[in-house]
Length: 310
Length: 310
Image 1 (cartoon, rainbow over the protein chains, first blue to last red):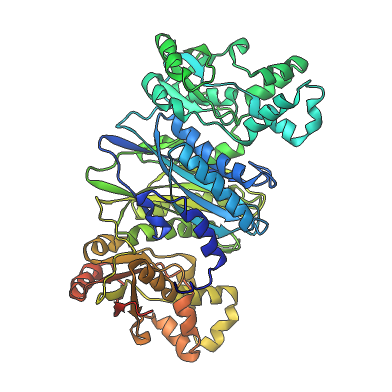
Image 2: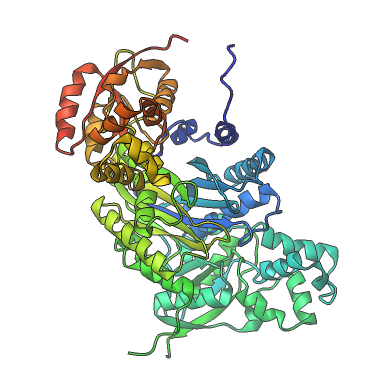
């Protein structure tokens, strides 16, 4: 075998990703673009979200976790729209501090999640950043024609349902910022780890996307806090909703902390990064939605919507 | 009309883009994702490219030009693949210095180009950057099934063709960096402006995408310099190519500068940012390709490919 020409830094970085790009339409990352063959009768669902070091993640977070967060916040949008993942493009702007080991870890995290969520890497772009590392991912999914679940579909009388516990990531972020808060919250090591993990690596609900598509009248993912996101869904649908605080599902860890400091309930409702699906449905749909989602785990609770009064 | 609630900075930024998002599948940027209805018998072509202030553009470039460059480098990939633009997603990480007037200019530039190239904004994400402004765009196009023009399609004996002049942007970048170089190059103001303009705002060849699809055996856009990009195309196709320097199309401005300083020819061939389409085709196709592209303007020249000898 002949000696290959010496690889540039960019070539070595692309080589790290090439192993992930096994989808035939990625052309082994050896082309300008990827190609997808849309299944007949399907619409393409498209979303893009960026994460920036120092804003959406800590510069010293493990690169595997950064990759997972960057991909999963997009997978969460696909799940909330009832779409089956089809693939993604990644734009990676690398800070000078992100050397080859960082990139290797990032590629490893991305590879594992691409496999886990059946969402293959299709292509992308790697550039140098004179500032912080930034990852922008555009993710694609398919839904049957006109079946994307919109925010604007909630009807008066619908139940409001979430696919899992709320507020864990907001409390986890506080713990990540200052480990000392765990003392007054009376949390053991496992509870602390659980909350920090919920912040560090979202658990997008792609397993329940089909159930959302079949049952929900409207849906979105909870990324900016349940309170604000529900308001957005209501505004898009032209309705109002009432949520009983006691009905908001909390993890044992979050409940323990909130018992010690009632102010944390507001943080839980407004903090964001939950990446659960918030959806509305006719009350008669709730039981079968719960059955359909039970296999995927995660509690779901409901409250009710009403007509907008102001 | 009731007084709307005060808008946050992010809301005001999204409002700037909402006016662009007239495609029905963009849902007025009021949803988590966009939806596209793929035409029957078509494949989706997907590409993503990022530009970073201080790397791919100057921080003091007009925001309209930054928007155009960010979108056009992606449009150029679609053109080289023979794809008709279908839409794009934009992730915008805004430096602290990029205030609302900057965003308004950026949105204006994006709106004009989205219209000009019939490539509508479908969605995206706006975040804060503690570092430089960065724009990542993912763009989508359609081609008839299996008709995306690959890099890996060139055959022995094919002609090598480019859709316009080479090296203008590389010389324009030197002028943009140091206006004094224009003296020895003996360029008048119009020639200087032409070269700088070729660097500042690419002119993607989407008008000839259908001709590329019909005639080319392989294609890519020239973004990293003709010499290196031709090598990539050859490697993907398993062939070698020979280019006569005299056949490389040069603008009058570039030719004038190169006459004064012959070393500039190397800069022209390796500098990049040309955003012309480099393609190969059977020699018998060249005349009809030239006729098909003549309406869109821009010279095209050809050389020939040979079998890889090493």
